[in-house]
Amino acid sequence: MKSLSILLTAALFCLKVSKGSETPQQVFMGNSTTSASNCFPALDFPVPKAPGRPPAQWWCSPSDTNGFLGFTYETDGCQSASTLLADFTRMRNDYKARYVRLYGWCDDQGTYLNNVIQAAYSAGLGVYFTIWFGFDGGNAWIRRRDLIIGIVRKNPFAPYVVRSIDVGSEPLYDWALQPPQAVADQIKFVRSQVGPFGIQVSISEMQYGYSVQGPSQMVLDAEDVVHAHELAFFDKDAKTGADAGPSLISSTKWFVSKTNNTRKIIFTQTGWPTNTKVWKGNSPKAVASLESTKAFAKLLDDSCETFKGITPLGGVGWFWHIWSDSMLEGWGVLDQSGKPKWTFAPRTSC
Ligand SMILES: *[C@@H]1O[C@H](CO)[C@@H](O)[C@H](O)[C@H]1NC(C)=O
Ligand SMILES: *[C@@H]1O[C@H](CO)[C@@H](O)[C@H](O)[C@H]1NC(C)=O
Image 1 (tube, rainbow, N blue to C red):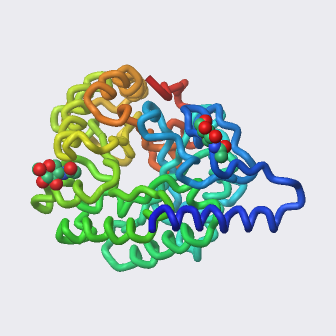
Image 2: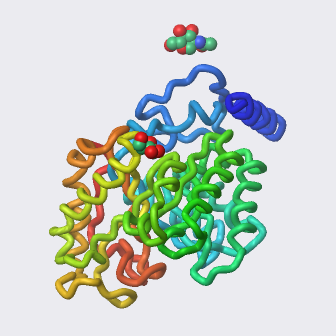
């Protein structure tokens, strides 16, 4: 059933492409390999005008993926199609991003998310979608969930761009859905809708989130992949970014053990602030400064081999939280005017 749907999707897609195009398309149906570079979104993969192969033969394998993946990108600003393309292209060209993770919500009928898919494909980025709950309860998330599912079904590029869908960013910690079984049930429901397109489903959550509502193992069990928040700045004993190693290792090991060493571990939110204008730390010794931020970025780079040694499936991939200070003051790689705060040149493999 699963492979049938994928084939069907691919076939429909080819039909659509060949109908709509004037020039002959390169079609790789049937027999392509996914070696480290002949796959999306490898840094040296020349993205064709149309995918021309089934999604199962399109994506780079998680086992070949580690190091810096890309940035979290806040979507409340409903950026225009041209801004999306400019930002995504800059992420790829200047920082070697391979993915972009959406955070927040642009409340329209789907134009924005379709523009994201188009811009990401053009820039060569995969996308991590987030079903956004917001912070004030309500049922808007159901409409958002169904909008995303509808886009995955209707937009022929979606299975080639959308790598994963998170049922919320910290939904356990925020009590967005209660009890934890309800979160697990939603993961399963969304997967029943998008799994046939090869899209992974999880939640984006910190270790602590899995204890606030009581036992939440069923949520971890339901996830295709672990999407962990590693914000060591908020630890009770936080000092500088350079000192955060033990915190990252301990939390990573916790996720590995709770998923029996069987799930890929991605840090969907990690970073360190250069100031405390939005949030103070929970430790009086936590240092928010450019030096501390740079040290944390270096720690992530230096830990690549260590992470690879303690996690399954090729090690940890991580997203820097966040793209720009205009999205979250203090946490961006770019300042409020869009200039880099430091030379951020993270490692993309180890
Ligand atoms: C697919 O690749 C395999 C291994 O390289 C090769 O043996 C086979 O003939 C190919 N099949 C087609 C249809 O090209
Ligand atoms: C891990 O193993 C425990 C004990 O057998 C089991 O209850 C749990 O469902 C497993 N979880 C995963 C993600 O494999």
